[in-house]
Each structure stands twice: as C-alpha cells, then as structure tokens.
Picture 1 (cartoon, rainbow, N blue to C red):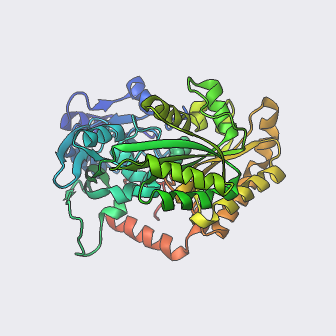
Picture 2: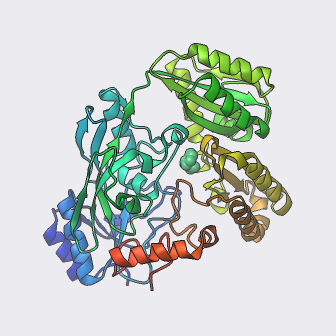
Amino acid sequence: MTVPADHIVDEFRAALDHNAVLTGGDADPFLFDPRNLRTADDAVVVRPADTAGVAATVRICATHNVAIVPQGGNTGLSFGTESPTDRPSIVLSLARLNQIESVDPDRSTITAQAGVTIEAVQNAAKAVNRVFAPDWGARGTASIGGGIATDAGGNNVVRYGNMRDNVMGIEAVLADGTIWDGRRALVKDSSGYDLKHLFIGGEGTLGIVTSAVLKLRPATPYETSLLAAITGLDALAPLLDLAQQHAPGTVTAFELMPLVAIDRVVNVFDVVKPLDADTEYFALVKLASSNPIDGQIAAFLEAGAEASLIVDAAVAGTPEQEANLWAIRDHIPPTSAYIEHQHHGLKLDTAVPVDKVKEFVQSVLDAAAKIAPMALAYGFGHVGDGNLHMMILPITDEAVEPWLEVRDAITTEIDRRVFELDGTLSAEHGVGLLLRDRIGPQKPDIEWEMMRTVKRALDPQNLFNPGKLIPLVG
Ligand code: MLT
Ligand code: ZN
C-alpha cells in the first residue's frame, strides 16, 4: 500500500480547498516524467494553493508518517519525483503556488512562488528592464521551485551562474510544518551559515521551498547570437578566450552543438539550418550588452578565423534568426528530437573543470567507440561552464539488444573518467534516483556523512523525498 489510507486523504481534503486533492485517474497526469515514464503506479496528489496549505499538508504527513514527493513543473531528468514504493507517500504539487509576489526593480529582485515558471519570471524581469538569467529549453514549464531543488543551470551559466547564484532568499516549509521565511534581499550578509544553500540543490529532501527572492541583472538590449562552424574540439577553449578578449563581459552563452545533433533537429522540426558548413562541431555563442556590440562581434569572428578556429559563421541579424538558432539548441535533447530508443540510452549531465572539457569529450567518445560501437555518441551543451550532455544512444532496432549488454560497462567507465578528472555526474539536473547509487565515489565519505547529518537534523522522520540524492537515512 503506497497511497495514504482514506482517513488521511480526508484530512487533506478537510484542511485544503476542494481543488487541492486528486486521487485515482485524476492524479494520473502527475505520474509521468518528461520522458513519459511512470513515476508511480497510483498516487494521491495534493496541490495546496498557498504556503499555509503546504504547511498544513506537511503537518498531516508528519502526523501519519506519510512521505512527501515534491513536484514542480515536472521537467526533471533525474527521477527526482519517483514515489517511494516501500511506504505511503503523496505527490505534493507546487503548481498552484503560481504568483509573482513582487517585482522590485530598485533592488533588482523578483519574489515569486515556487510554481511560477522560469519564463514567467523572465518576462516579468523584462517588463522592468531587467534580466532573470537562468534559462533552459523547458523554461515554459519548469518552475522556480524545481529549478531551486536541482540547482538548475542552463544556457547562461557561463556569465550568470546556476540557480544558486540567482537566488537571494527563500521561504520553506520545514518537517514539522513550520514556515521559515528567509526571503531576504541582501547582497551581503555574513551573519552565519547561509541556510538557503542547503535547500538549493537539496532536491526537496530537507523541506519544501514555497517562494524565493530572485536576483535580476541589468538589461542587455544588444543581444546577438551566432553559430560558428569550428575546426574541432581543440578550438573550443581558445575560441571562448577570444570571445572574452574581444567582447569582454558580454559572453552570455557558449554552447557546443555537434553537426549530427543539428541535422537531426533540422530533419524533425520546423527550423532552418543556418549554415552549410560540414564541420563536426559548431559553437553557439550569445553575446549581450547594454551597448552596441557589432564591432566586437566582427573582431571576434575575424580573430577566430585568423587563428584557424572558425571555418564559417552565421550571425543572427534578425529576431527570427536569433530565435531559429535557439530553437535548434532547445530541440537538441533527444526527448524532444524523437529518437525512438533514447530511453534505453545514456544521457549525461557531467561537468568537468573547463580546461578538461576537450579531454573529457574525446575520452567519452573513445570509450563509446571501444565499448559500445553499436551506439551513436555525441556531446552537446554548456561547454563554456564545463557542463556537457554526452549522449550514447542505440538508434536502430538491432542496436538495442547489444547496447543493453554493454550499458553498465560503459556507464562505469564514463563515471570513472569523470571522477578521474575531478568532475561531477550532476551539474544541473540533480541526482534524484538516477545518479544516487553512482555518485558516491565523487566525494569523500565525510561529505556524504555531513549531508546525512544535516538530513537527519532537519528531517528526522525522513518525510521529504526519501531515497533521493543521498541514500536513505538509517
Ligand atoms: C539542456 O541543456 O538542453 C538541458 O539540460 C535539458 C537537457 O539536457 O535535456
Ligand atoms: Zn543542460
């Protein structure tokens, strides 16, 4: 029995409004992840409309020892919203906490509830001539709460950092139902432990983030993206260096796009191939500033060509061309590019120190060629901050069976290489269940033990998202 008993469900109904509790078939839409894989056979979904409702829900769960699996926009990729199978649990959806509570241009902050989408905050920031920097393909669905839970990153991290660098304060409901309001908007504060950082990247294991003060950046009305056909992986680091030299302070995104991925997107989606070059790799670069940057972009491209790093480049000259470049990028993740057997494959969210990117990509490609020659291997993503999404996928019917035989071996080999390079298996998607049992060797035992100690202290009943991120607390 993994759903709470009826009398507990009645308590949720009594404490919350009539829209708040979904059971049976009504709960079903909440029980699939973005790959359409089921996260629970059956569940009770509780959807409070405000922080007080979240607190009431947590109190009921604490009384009856019912586990809580928080859910934001449900775009996560690390099985962070799977329901436990060994104890009663609820899915706690934050989707109805969808209010932007205040927009404060004088402080350059927005305070938003957990269920507000990334895109809604971006738009609210734009309306006051500011930028909310976190941005990734699922921006229209992914929520502030989910982004905080996984310390999500995306395309602009090279300039503005992960979610962690864009959150100034949070409100959270703790394990006994206490509401902690830590929504301070202080640029500096050295008054002790910065507790919000335990919850950012905490994957809902320590408490439920209900609202956050988000940091805004100055507007950058002059924005240009370009796609450069590059001579190879060796060109990446010097090219980023050239961009920083010729257009200092403007490099907002620096993404690796392999030809094989671009071609797949162009074949499936209504996008235009911006460049006919047939180099194996492309760099998608976004430069943004409060001042005109055309001259800097021209100088950067010229220097890149002179140094034999760039073969050809397409610079977006219109908003449509700009949107086209980013549509190609957004569609690269194969969940949306309709690769039939992708769910059997490996998709990595690894990061390595930026000077090791080339070595890492090449070594994964080499390992794949050796161990899994039947699979298609390529890497794309946030090369400017060291976070590469390597894909190793069986793409034909015949490849699936032999692939499944070597999947564990190639996974172990890649993990070993990540650890060898002092990298991480999870840079922005979180650990969830997907990586929980692989990530151990990445940190010394004492770090995991400190995490367990924090978990035990803040959630002694192990109510919050049990089994995720760190092994179950004993
Ligand atoms: C991306 O970089 O596109 C996002 O992390 C999403 C993904 O990898 O699927
Ligand atoms: Zn990414």
